[in-house]
View 1 (cartoon, rainbow, N blue to C red):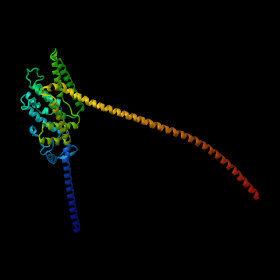
View 2: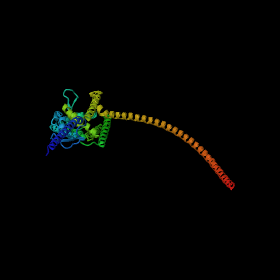
View 3: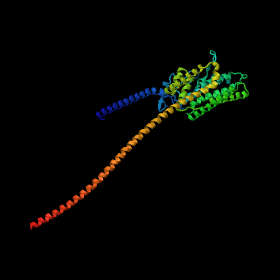
View 4: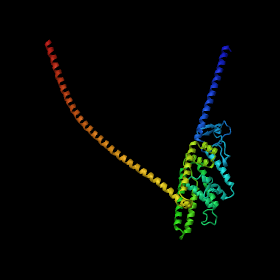
Length: 427
C-alpha cells in the first residue's frame, strides 16, 4: 500500500473512532436525561394496579411501569428507604404492583390474626379493645381504622361491646363471639377485595342498596320495639329487632366493589396508609399508587375522620347508643333528601330559566320570521311588478323591431328603385 493510502486509512480510523465516541456520549446523555425524567415521573403515576411478572433481581433489567420500561436500578433507587414499618416491616424493596402489595400485607395481617388464642381475642384484635386510660374510648383495631364512615365505625364499636357481654346478660347478646368474629373477618376480607377485585359499579350499587334496605328494616324494627315499651308482644318485637340487626350487620360485611380504577387505587392508598402509618410506609404507599391518588385518598380520609368527632360531640355518652340506633340512618337519609331537594330546586330553577329563555327565543324567532316573511312578500310584489314592466317593455321592443324591419324593407325597395333609375339614366 502506498504511503498516501496508509495516511488516509489512519485518518478514516480516527474519524470512525471519533464518531463512535460521540455516539456513545450522546447515548449516555440521553439515558441520563431519561433517568432524570423517570425519577420525577414515576412518583406521579405510581406502579401498575394489577399483578404482573415479578420484579427482576438484575439491576440492569427492565420492568414495565405504565407505558415505560424502567430499569430495576432506577426503581430500587426510588424505593430506597421506603419499606413498611411495624407488623409489616417484612415488606421492602420494589413492589411489583398495587394489588401485589395489598395481598402481601393481607397475608401478614392474617398471620398476626392467627396468633390470637380464640375468637374473642381475634375479634378484639380486629375491632379494638377498650382504652385502659379513658373510659368509653375504644383503642381501634385494623378493621375499625378502615371504617369509611361514622356508622360503620360505630357498628364495630357495637361488636366490641356485644362480645364483652356475659351470656346471661339482659338483654342477651345478639350474637356469640364466634359469630361476631365471622362477621368481622368477612368485613375485613371485603375491604381487601375492594382493591384486589376489578371495579364494578353494578356490584357497588347492589351492596349499597342491600345495606340501605337492611338498615331501614333495622330502624323500623327498633321503632316498633320502642313503641311497644313493656306491653304485650314486646318479646316478639325484641326478637324481630335482633334478627333485623343481624341482617344489617351481615349486609355491612358483604363484598362490594370499587367504582373505577381511580377509586380502586385511592382505596388502596387509604388502606395501606392507615394500616402502616410509619413515615417510610407512607412514602412507600405514595410511590406505589402515585402522589395524585395518594393525596386524594389522604384528603378524603381526613375529611371523613374530621366529621366523626363532630357527631360524637353533639351528644353525651348516656344517649349515644339510642341516638345511633334510631336516628343515624334517618339523619343520613334526611341529609340525602335535603341534598336531593336542593338539587331538585336548582334543577327546577334551571328549567324555569331555560323555559323563559326558550320563550324569549321563540318570540324573537317569530318576530324575525314575520319580518323575513314581510320582506319576502315585498320582494315578491316588487318582482312581480318588475316582471310585468319587463314584459311590457319586451312587447314594445318587439313592436319597435317589427317597425324597424318594415322601414328596412322600404329602404331596400328605395335602393332598388334608385339603382334602377341610375341604370336607366346611364343608357
